[in-house]
Length: 301
Image 1 (spheres, rainbow, N blue to C red):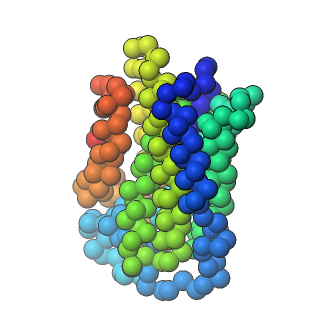
Image 2 (image 1 turned 30 degrees about the vertical axis):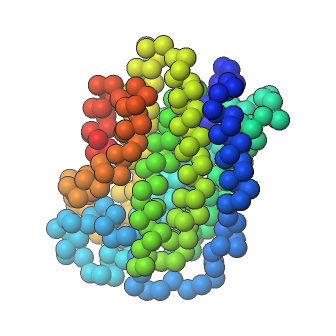
């Protein structure tokens, strides 16, 4: 996920990489075997827990029919999966760039390639799930796509690993709720279960890399990258659910987007889901005043 100036040292990180490799060999999934792609979709089941819908708790939600609510959760989940594909493609490019010409016998190198394989499977799984739900391809905004193209080409060290960690942790809490909710479509629950199991290894690896890089970072670099990671987090969170989903399901898109952005329930849910991430960022010195202001703007803190 980064361009590293030096390889990981001889401390805990190589041992962690070896343990993660062992875990990958024991606990990995093949979506083509785990998911029944031909099974019909029961009419009344949600795409994500309704509490995670951007409009849950708003006046507009109260006005919607149950059929509209179900359809909206499916399209919001599809939008989140499309955003996931977008960011996983960014991560794969940064990982490959990081591992270029490194020691192939090292556990770090081998786990990095294992992670790329995981991300490829995840993206294909997300793509097939979106297709199965009958949703269109929801893209982030053009501005986000342009900024991400710049970021993925230049990000290194804790900035790259920290950005990856933000994306992974934000999705993790949602998907843990999703995989255990019996009112959610089985295909969405299984997609979440596969992703949660394999992403837990990626998050451990990313946290170790952030710590390792920051151990040799200057105070100025730490402050700069704290703000950069927060900006990336802002872009990810604001692009998780495209405003286009509202028009797709037949709602007044302008009103829906406004109520979603002002939704106190959504804000509270986002803050609680990011609590662990914020604790880690504070622990490693990446919660500076500018970063805190950005996280608060998108209700991550």
